[in-house]
Image (cartoon, rainbow, N blue to C red; front, side, top):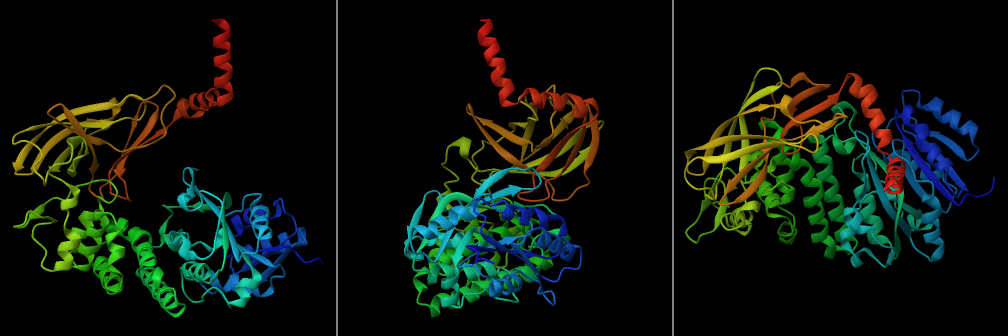
Length: 548
């Protein structure tokens, strides 16, 4: 057989259902001179039979099967790498795909000039709703060749091994292989590749299609989504230690702050968003695992974070875990704390007391949020549902508590409105918030979701009610936090099944889900979607124009 230009390794474990899709995406490549190695991590389902069938169909395909399961991605990649015949290598996971021209585009970058690897954009596809986005788009926005990672240390955030085509000579020259026996092997492998490469090229075109199932069942979640496991936390921290050691040994300690910032902003941030859903025992163990490592990070890495993230991290380090859970519910959403404290110098801190240590005061100082002076439409409040009672039909009675730690609202009752819009028109539910004590208000709202105006063709999707405040002719709209767990309410409204439930992730908002049923689902919506297609709309405009 002639020597292939590129070897694409497809690693698989118990994924017979999706393996064919992944392999076929390689077989369709516009550059056809490829070798495809299916590296099976000792699957126990029908994967071996599928792999053998694919190999029989196409002489470019070879099937490797590990003698025992390794429990990770490294061993099957390394075994395939040992037998690969091409001068250039790529890696593909069995649940993902390559765009049709991925090999052609990356190989062209290698042939333009001598580089150690080429990388391109990663297209993320949500399996629950089909939405597509680009992973780290700002890093792959333009074509460029860099002579070393120091030219753009932000690239440490793009740690996927699968978005790259490597020169085999580069990997062999440095003995670069995937570390076995640990998870998050991509992070160490990619950090080493970035640091060891003399030159690498970035192209803006998509070269990898990554299917993401963010809310998969825990037993079916990918390794990166198994954040509920403390072993998962330990693996992430362990890999960070290995990267730190490599940076020190290879003379790249100048990258340490950038690498630490990446860990805080990306890795730790994912766990922080889950904190509201963890119990006290888990939180305590999590703090015990991450705090010793956080103590080793460079101060500059913390200073580069948004204030809200710094607050959550410091509350964890101070073992103020219930407060860390509260703070995490506001990450990325501008939600205020329930309470703040001011010291003698006028500095404002998160929580009910001034922190004792200088470092804690630095991290928990939220004076830069300007809670007292920012314009009212962008002010920070905290709206929490403290009680949900089911009413008749599709209605619920809500007890809502609003926290105003900066005392922006005047003394006395406040006008408030609940807003929800499953279509172009919205349902507005006015109610009154009465003062409980300075900075705290409480009110009761009757939300009848049967009154929400729905489009003629129905509505399929999720909405989260918002709360609007009005003061001196200005309005402020903020999200509404719900109890993290309560029995879902399922009922019928005209032509729809309606479910009121906790969001179950993120900040934990009140969530309303509409599902069309009957003729609306079977006839009206399909017809409406066909009519709404761009070609039909253009034709309708042309007809309307001709009739004028």
